[in-house]
Amino acid sequence: MNASNIGRWMLVLPVTALFIALSWGVSLADGKGIFASKNCGSCHQIQGPAAEKTFDDQLKKKGPELWYSGSKFKKEWLEEWLEKPTTIRPLKYNSVTDKNTDKHPALSKKEADEVAEYLMTLTAKEVAKGTAEEKVTPQGKNLFIKRYSCVGCHSIKAGAQKVGGVSGPDLSEAGKRLTADWVYAYLKEPKVFKPVKRMPVFVDIINDNEMKTLAGFVAAQK
Image 1 (cartoon, helix red, strand yellow):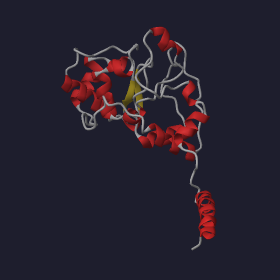
Image 2 (cartoon, one colour; image 1 turned 90 degrees about the horizontal axis):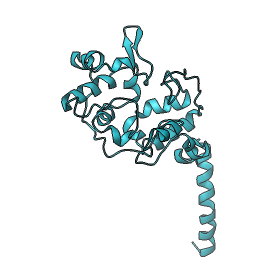
Image 3 (cartoon, helix red, strand yellow; image 1 turned 135 degrees about the vertical axis):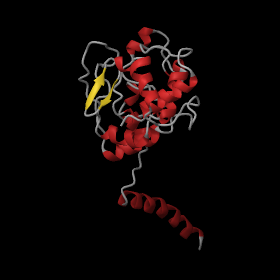
Image 4 (cartoon, one colour; image 1 turned 90 degrees about the vertical axis):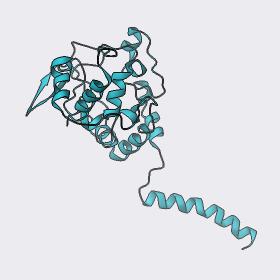
């Protein structure tokens, strides 16, 4: 093959690849690009460590930080939620009185899948895999409901009904969205993820085994 023919092939191949990609429905935009184009970063922090240092910093936040989303969330839930968002916090973000009526923007299925793929790459080294097991146990239930009164701020399912408080995120289906490993890491090192928050700090109050049991109970709620 002479030089002129080689040159023609070098021009044709990229065009052919583009045609195939479009024909097969393969997106040329990645999740990171979609995240940026939708201006998601105006509400969600994607670079760690946690930025807030004071309550004023916390109150300025418009939405949860996502710099450890790959450690916190399950990909299947992210894909579904980004396409069809539902309310997780009964009360408005950073409020203990106002009902949450905000509607999170919805993405197309393809956009949701790609953004979820991107968010799953954002992880925290403090979350080690395999540290806690999703499991409903009498001990976990007792810790959540009675001993530490988590149910005072968070709701869970009791049969066909929800019971519990509304000042914290709804945990009735926490197991669909949260990993047990992240819940455990959050209980163990809360200041890594949220230096300023309303939720009580249980470090030196709950022992390590109880943290794992409680994390497993929360992550088993589906």
